[in-house]
Length: 191
Image (cartoon, rainbow, N blue to C red; front, side, top):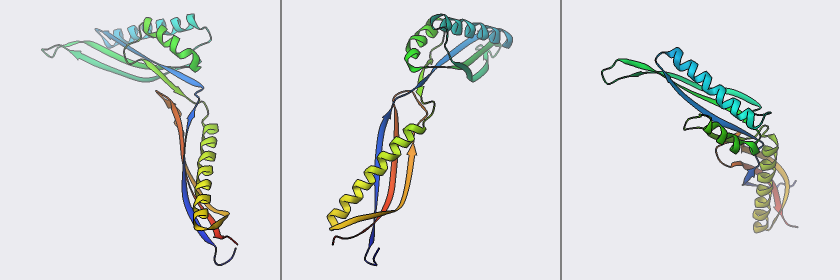
């Protein structure tokens, strides 16, 4: 590299849609009872009914069920007297994305409450991260080549690169991987 070599610094952005490979059916269960124990028993029974209905439809699913949220609140009448308790629970049932729509229908018909829905995601986002990083670096290099060409220079070696990447592991809609590459290349006048 000669003393007349310079540096071109540019950015490159990439946005790629990502195919999901897992879904979580979000099952909301709301029960009430005169006592906290009654609300808890009713909730356990409702969850059993919902999950059994899912398993009757697709015996190997769900792959895994986890409780995501639980809230027990007292209910009072207009005079301030205790009427009972409301238990709000949110379960997440993991499964392949292809089965989620039908099994959400089954869960709703079996007693899941409003707020139930589907979240799609990625079991391992590393492949998507690699693809979008490669795309952003490619855009950045192309931008550097254009800048060098406009200056009448030739692009030389890469001096520095920094990439910020975002791949959401779950979404209620489509998943997009994004990346921004900031690169610096050496350049010199064409000879």
